[in-house]
Length: 152
Image 1: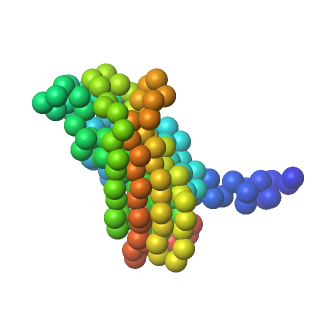
Image 2: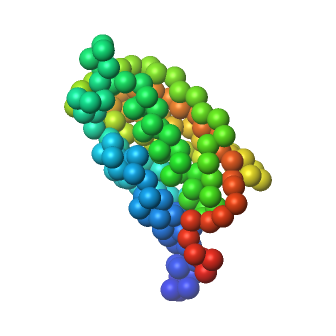
């Protein structure tokens, strides 16, 4: 395979990574919660976060809103990998097990369908032992604008 063919083959991944970098630079919420991007590729994102004391509720477990936010961030990074500004249209989460103080949660978002301006993404959240904590489904909607310059 020649250099140009390799460059063209890698272009979607490179665009996805550049989009993630552009979004991350402005994403104060995810950064403030200590999230880290593990991996991004077209239609997919993996993000991790450790449950801190200030994320626990009155039952001593992770507040569901923080689990939802982790899933929502993974969803956002997955659906914004095509250099088209995309936002959430509808999201739902099902909590299966509690997250506990100190757990390292990992959210893996995967595109299930993208057609026109709409998309559907599933996000599975695991704890550090590999147990499924929650399942999330997000519906996306592409809006005007791009994340990268017009030369991309």
